[in-house]
Amino acid sequence: MYSILFSHPLVEAITTWDFNDGRWLKAPSGFVHEDNSEKPSYYALRELIHGAWETHETLHTDENGVLVFNGFKGGYRLQTEDGNASFRLDGDTGAQVQLTEA
Image (cartoon, rainbow, N blue to C red; front, top):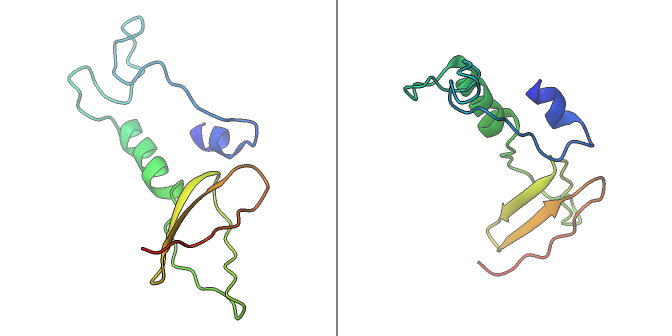
């Protein structure tokens, strides 16, 4: 379900009511047990957030010094030998980035 929600262009956030079991009607609906030990769903969601949904790439510019990048919406930090830059991808538009001295 989380992957479907994450991929839908109209979804801006996902809210869960129960991180720990027993918080809503004593239901076992959380990502961790009442003693805070992790459940399989905790590890599955962690792998999505810090695995499949994160972008770690090594990219190279073309002969004109242009870098083309497709990624998830959100903030990015670009590090090069010549400087650093931060940028956001919001929607279907691209981002132009100016490098600053490191």
